[in-house]
Amino acid sequence: MTLKINSIAPDFKAKTQEGDISFHDWLGDSWGVLFSHPKDFTPVCTTELGELAKMKPEFDARNVKVIGLSVDPVSDHIKWLDDIKDVSGIKPTYPIIADEKLEVAKLYNMLEEDAGVESMGRTAVDNQTVRTVFIIRPDKRIGLYLTYPMATGRNFDEILRAIDSMQLTLTHKVATPANWNKGEDVIIVPAVKDEEAKKLYPNGWKTLKPYLRKVPDPSK
Image (tube, rainbow, N blue to C red; front, side, top):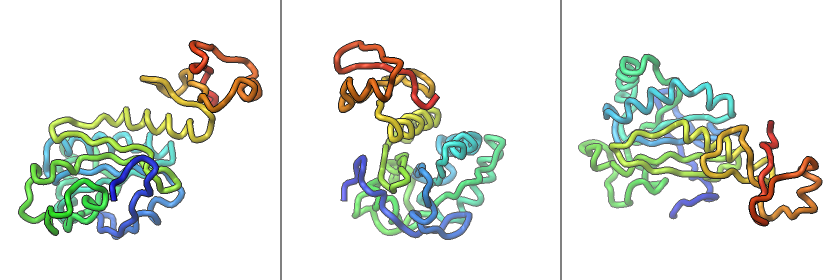
């Protein structure tokens, strides 16, 4: 099955360095970020896991659970966490899936079905497509996914920005413009006609085009 936005995020059972999980049960009613890595002890991923550990309070504040995935065993994850702490000054406190049999990577369309059935002997280059971030809504559907090349570190500020937009637009009948940040003006969606908009936004709006109407962030 090819995954896309609004697809149900596939459920699975997996081992992590914090114990066994069942993914949908672990998510509960929270939002989720599943971010994957081609192998433990790789340079870019080491910086990413450390940065996310620093930013975890920002995700917690948005009711977002964070979970990593790497195509290596739990024993390697535990050793890697010490390296991450040495590099970043903080040890990640979120679970990291040990996808030794490549099952989750295949389930999430990050590896082909013929990629084998174990991580042993595979290099980071073999797994280079295991570099996707999935944002999962509380309804267990995929809200966004971003895939990065191995040599390009991920921008977690952008992932937070996208979550802010998604949480706002699921609650209000608005969309967010390019480069939007929380608190800035938003766009009234075209499905909301002017008569309804007058009730929703009695203080009015700025019309740039008939189809482009801006109002202040309604969550402020």
